[in-house]
Length: 101
Image (cartoon, rainbow, N blue to C red; front, top):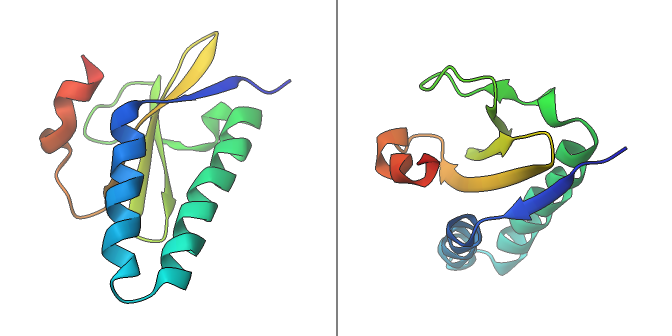
């Protein structure tokens, strides 16, 4: 049975910023990346532990998956999955650490 996926407002804002950046060069590729991020949420709902543990945190309940060069970081609990961030792979996790409080 799939677990409910909840998107934080910050994660949705991250996706908007990513789409805006990519669309400067290619609106088509921007839409493709955004679609794949949302499609990936379906697989996370079905298998929450499919993502790796975020290395910087080392916590079982905080995992990540990659879409192209973007990290989709999410928290897993018994009742839901919360996607807390979608950041570029080169961006430091410290820049969003307040989202895990």
